[in-house]
Length: 200
Image 1: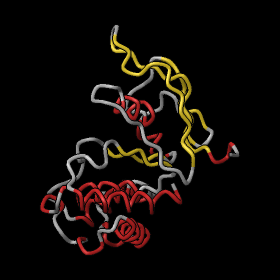
Image 2 (image 1 turned 135 degrees about the vertical axis):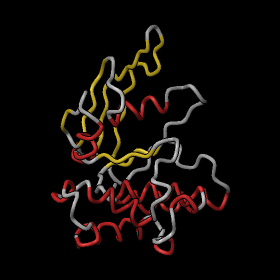
Image 3 (image 1 turned 90 degrees about the vertical axis):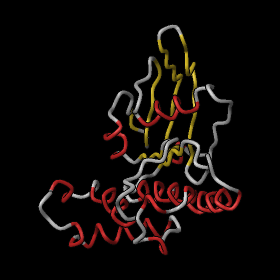
């Protein structure tokens, strides 16, 4: 494969907490149009690795490159703006807001209007278009006006992915996206991931 297809690359990542090495000398390449999985028992360091790749944790040693640019030690916000989106083990949504409001907040973070606190968010057509596209791609069109805290666990995970998609990422890091789901919800999530892999 050509180097241009590698979207995220890590070399010799190690994270130590005192004398404990939670991640030890890990190298990985994430390729466009591929689904990658890190599999292991609880405590193996999977979430720690995800946190290192996303900037939520700084590595003790090693490097991370996103789209060919070294992002080691950058803040999660800077890495996110560089094209990395992620979800967490614990669902991370605004439960009292609607599905649309949750996704629109994520979309707003990527526009020049992000800090215009006194402007009506509904008035920005680019934001609304990006919001609608992310909701549709995540398969939540029929839940657009539902309050996020009232939808099923699987739909909340889809909402979290929609929020991530609204930030226009190249790479999606999903920490245990099927956790706590029933068979039908897990099947829907797998279908969604297969659909997303073409452009991520």
